[in-house]
Amino acid sequence: MDQHAVEQHGKAEPAGLDVVVTTMASDSHTWNLVFLHLLLEELGHRVTNLGACVPDALLVAECRRIEPDLIVLSSVNGHGFHDGLRVIAALRACPELARTTTVIGGKLGIAGSGAPARRRTLLAAGFDGVFEEGRAVREFPSFVASLTAGAGVLL
Image 1 (cartoon, rainbow, N blue to C red):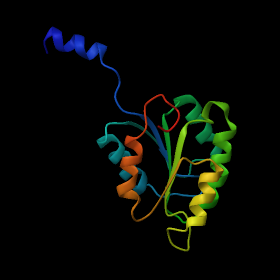
Image 2 (cartoon, helix red, strand yellow; image 1 turned 120 degrees about the vertical axis):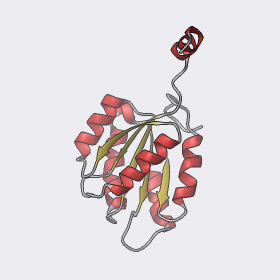
Image 3 (cartoon, helix red, strand yellow; image 1 turned 90 degrees about the vertical axis):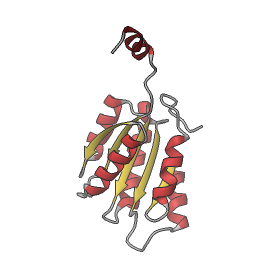
Image 4 (spheres, rainbow, N blue to C red; image 1 turned 135 degrees about the vertical axis):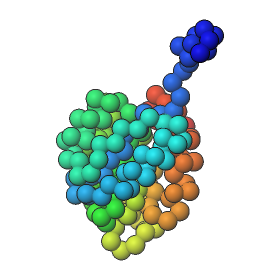
């Protein structure tokens, strides 16, 4: 590596977002987290994967410590709607995380996807995005691309 390349690297702005990926306390699935982790890294972001069955207090504590640009909650067990309402209340109650962009996705209920009332309720509760199974895989990267590192808010 020549000297010029080192100098440019030293002045480079960090690219991408700092993202926390996790499930919620009742969800033991991990394949969804692996998929999201790889997808977000492929899109150029730094990912901290908290894993499955993360208790609410631990999730809040880790997000306060990490100070991510984006929190991604994924659920596969069908309890995502109810768990998500509880978790977003805890995240928004924390002043350091009140404006952190937070999204939820996966299988959020047991009666199928695409329930408009469920999406509206989650958005009204404080989520910045809701990505249920199906078309969400196509929409999620575009949503993430609209975010700016360190902004704490959507563009």
